[in-house]
Image (cartoon, rainbow, N blue to C red; front, side, top):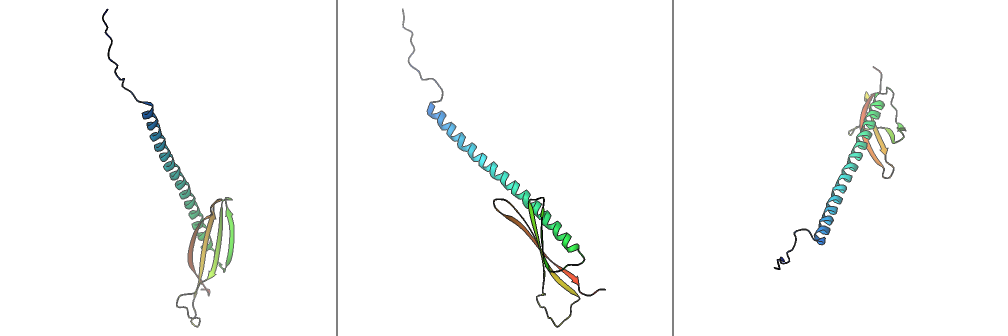
Length: 137
């Protein structure tokens, strides 16, 4: 009987070490992708909160400036139990103000601040100056 045995040949495939290295690289890549995705989602939520707070501040400043009788003082309140707003109205002086010279218009400084956030307080602040007629027409 003839011996037809073949010499030992190495079969093609991956070794256990190559498979482990591939899994390690894959897990690092997936971790990086998840961190990027998580950061992107956080930035999107934070941006949406800022836009909402800015809308509330713009709305509040429009309400305040549309009032016919404005006086210096402070006011505050809540919107949706999440956003706290503060309004501060103060007398404002012209840069070259001369008290001896009468003015028909009195400037008032109006600041509106909207604050929100549980862990880290965030805020949006808008400021304007409104001229109020000191004497009736």
